[in-house]
Length: 187
Image (cartoon, rainbow, N blue to C red; front, top):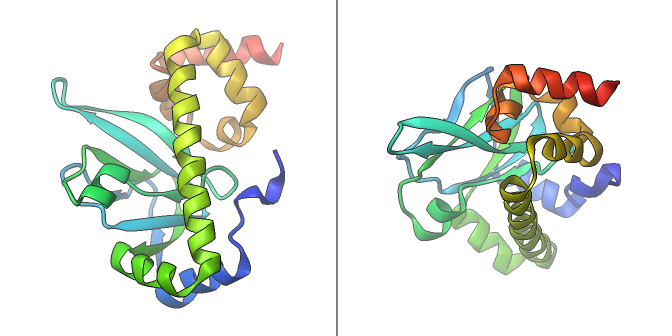
């Protein structure tokens, strides 16, 4: 994967800088809690965010995606963002994190004014939908050994930066089992 794939084009980055809000998050700080309407898109500059799904029956949260400067740095909660409903997800920093956020109304306005932003926005939305669909298929069909091997090979930035407990939660395995998989992969 090319290193600059997720860099914002200069004109788009300028819009985030000029019209967005810059935020510094502490480790474990919740950016969007479960039950809140998410009306923003976030761009990760430094650190990392998790998107976690709230399971109503068990009242537990489960990591479903990782967002780093070099791995899917744009994040929102699509259902809440587009349909203006409370979210069943949370967005949480797993380490000290810096983000730019843009409100939906401002994005809608700027998309009509700036073709570079419009092209970027729609290409990223499509990219996100395809990626999430592929990832869901892997989560459903891969055994834990296959899923870890995939993450290790295709997304080493996740393995290197995200705490093990969230990778294990994402994979639906225990941290101890993840530790065994890591030892096996490195041998």
